Amino acid sequence: MAVQEQKKYLGSTNIEIGPIGIGTWSWGDQRGWGYGSDYNEGMLYEAFETCVGSGIKFFDTAEVYGEGRSEQLLGGFLQRKKIPLVIATKFSPYRYRLSGLMLNGALRRSLRRLQLPQVALYQLHWQTRWVSVERWMAAMANAARAGLVRAIGVSNYTRDQMRRAGDALAKRGLSLASNQVEYSLLCRKPEIHGIVDLCRERGTTLIAYSPIGMGLLSGKYSPDHLPAGGQRTKFSRDYVAKIEPIIPILRKIGEQHGGKTPSQVALNWVICKGAFPIPGVKNKEQAREVVGATGWRLEASEIAALDEASGPLQM
Image (cartoon, rainbow, N blue to C red):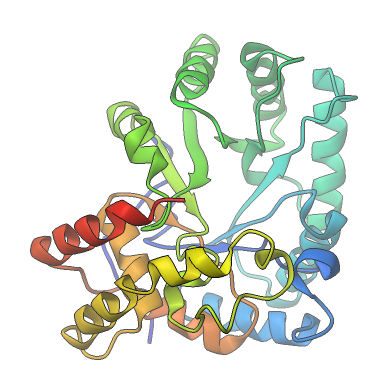
């Protein structure tokens, strides 16, 4: 099985990303995700190989994921596979980081961990009060001019922050390629707060993290079987019980598309909304499931049914 769908590009660039990518938030993270216990480097490489072999091109990481371990793992996998892929990472604007010089240094350290001379997409991981959107975009533009970055993105930006970032880059002759935000059937804030509309208006890619609600839409959890690790603190037994009614709807729709799983239906919903989902994978089985979310599309009536069912479930 391979990822087969109309070509999709990152923002207004010529960087081809396909219909779906992979997020590596959990890679190397022992404290929050249990790396080293129920999954390890070997399993992650098998997942990576399965994704790449199926046509997935885009992998998203960040310097804070696993305290740099995610970038190191991904960099090692890239060296073993030796094929061109689209790699995205992020800069963390901590309180002590107040200048473009610090962004440049962090970017170069990320590139060393990734073993790359240039990253396809560099993103501001979040916006802070102590450095303006415009100053950060100036630093990002400098990194692009230096050839260290092909495209510039942001993450967790509001509609206003995203607009300001795009305007600041435009003054430098550049464009804002993406805004990475949480977006799923359980988190439709990007629709409510105008981010989806602004992305569409400006030709900016909405990258959707946690597109299956950190696993809650997979159907494998219940009030008596809650997520483990870092996920457990985010979801109460009452909330897991609250979302149970949408799982049979996902299953029924999946059956009508040749036996697709709830996760695959939830991912396809994100794709049909025009966003670019980046689910996480820890093993080759999860990687195969991600690939199976592409190459088909929900009917308009099915999207409407999921919209209605998910309305009362928003986090």
